Image 1 (cartoon, rainbow, N blue to C red):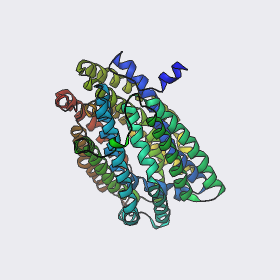
Image 2 (cartoon, one colour):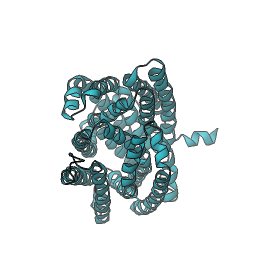
Image 3 (cartoon, rainbow, N blue to C red):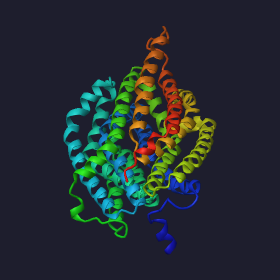
Image 4 (spheres, rainbow, N blue to C red):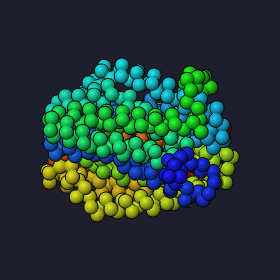
Length: 459
């Protein structure tokens, strides 16, 4: 019983072997990210199998808009995660309590704002994307249901960020696994049994995310030995609001710009037709799993860096950055190899169309080596964010995505036009993405070595 309590308790990462602690903290996060990815993957599989390839394309085309409209929560989540980890590492209970209360209040305000604007922006955005008429209605229905029930998704992400900042990645994993199982069951019931199509997939996701948010809130309420969740701490104070904005805004802006660039690229993707749109959805679903180690190690490095900087242990930060990145690269290389060896079988999970399987796998092979580069980018960016430097990763993301990826995608498409391919080679979508990843890893490494991030600490 005592061991079980320890498993679900906050973890002080300022003691012990850095590499071992990072990996131990990362594993539940990796499993959680895999479960999170299952939300989208199961949606795609069930829609593709029971409704058809066009419905699969509809769910995929809605993705960039979902990401764009979630930027508010991305900013709050990143900011609160950094503050929580540093205050927890510095053992400052009052500041920790105020940070958590303020972040929950801001999340509630942001949720209300998003629910209010969604009905007015989804269809114009879909038209801007040149979404084919055959799927635009499905896309709109999917988005409307998701954002009318956005409160569950918003609070789960914020509460999960708080739990991870406290060093508790196991609780966040448990609640996400529960929600994932619920999502799978409801997906099948709503789509296969009640024939609700893409609307059923969206409704299943909303219900599952709301349950995960309620479980996370219950867990936080019981952690009275770590911080205080009292009414007086929920009133936003200028100091904490401004700090959340300073730390979270760059990540929110980054996500917004990345989402806008994805929308621009999605417009190019849509120009290649429904078959390529569906192939892009399949590749991105498998890509989501391949990227999981990178995101998991990056988040783990943020918490590790934040706690140790809060405790003024810079020696441990440097050691952890080195050990964590090396392990991350090894893990990513192994997963990439598995994807290449079993790629066709993975693609066939989503569709019974042989041509679509082959097209998807040919695109997937282009991205393969890029996953190792992404490990370097995410790990070292995580260290910088944990220190409080969210600006440097922001600029790197903007440069690699807006100034490199988008022009490359359209440039390759333009210069590869022919009679057989009047709009150019569709591989431009993935070649441009690979090159942006490789350049991003190099730039991130250089800025990490410069060390300016060490001067940005909150505490």
